[in-house]
Every structure is written in structure tokens, then in C-alpha cells.
Amino acid sequence: ETRSDCPPDVEELGRSTWTLLHSMAATYPEKANMEHQANMGGFLKFFAKLYPCWVCADDFQAWMAHPSGRNQPKLESRKEFGWWMCEAHNEVNRKLGKKEFDCRLWEERWRTGWKDGRCD
Ligand code: FAD
Image (cartoon, rainbow, N blue to C red):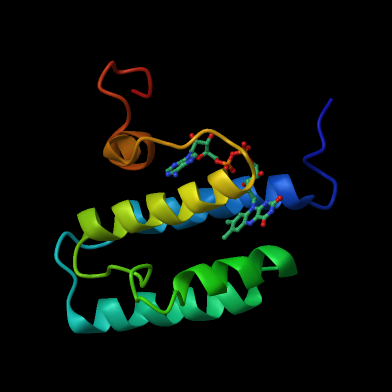
């Protein structure tokens, strides 16, 4: 049975959104110029305000704005940005009691495909 032609619930919305967000990291420049960094920074800021699950959005904004500055988006390179996105996702995983993802594997999951060739 498929729910794919029904309005998305929080879970389906989340899965689709993580696909978009990690794919944006996967296609981010290896070295990002100032314009790219500013565009992505702006996108994330507005995304965190507009994400259509309001509790999710509030928590995500608060996490990004941690007073220490440690959760600010890291936008200089694809590697840093992909790692940051993985940490952001892990923060939500922890909150929901899900397993944490090993961020060393984010690029295989979202950019190159697994080394064993199962995505070829
Ligand atoms: P998802 O968490 O959607 O993950 C999809 C796939 O991504 C996984 O199968 C795995 O292959 C991969 N993956 C998992 N973790 C990582 C990682 N750290 N880095 C890279 N890849 C990874 N739901 C709520 O109920 N409450 C909330 O407050 C909430 N906040 C959210 C905030 C944001 C910004 C987003 C985008 C989603 C939020 N969600 C929230 C939805 C939630 O994160 C999940 O998407 C949803 O519960 C479905 O989970 P899932 O188990 O199918 O896998």
C-alpha cells in the first residue's frame, strides 16, 4: 500500500527534506566562493524559519543559533558543509531516539554511492 499520493506526514516530509538537504551538500562546490557561501547561508536561515513543521523548525533554528556559535553552518567547502549537515541530522536523530549516522559515510550515502557498488 502506498501513501505517496496523500499529503505528507512529518516523517515523509522529513525524509524528502533530508534528501534535498544532503543532495544540496553533495552538489556543493569543493571550494565555495563568497557568493555560494552567502547563498547557502541565506537559504538555511530562511529554510529554518519556513520549514512546514513548526516545532521542527523552532528546534532547528535554536540548534543553529547556539550561543557558542558551534552549530553555525560550515560553508567553506563541500566536505565541511556535508559534515555539518550530517551533524544537524544527527541532532534530530538523537532528539527522536533514532540511531546516529556515522558522518564519515555521508558522502557514500549521498554523493558517490557505496563502495560495494550496490548503487551502480
Ligand atoms: P530520516 O531521518 O528521514 O533519514 C533519511 C535517510 O538519511 C536515512 O535512511 C539514512 O540513510 C540517512 N541519514 C540518517 N541520518 C543521517 C545523517 N546524520 N547524515 C546523513 N544521512 C543520514 N521529526 C519529528 O518528529 N520531530 C522533529 O522535531 C523533527 N525535526 C526535523 C527537522 C528537520 C530540519 C528535518 C529535515 C526533519 C525533521 N524531522 C522531525 C523529521 C525526521 O528527521 C525524519 O525525517 C523522520 O522521522 C523520518 O525518519 P527516517 O527514520 O525515515 O529517516
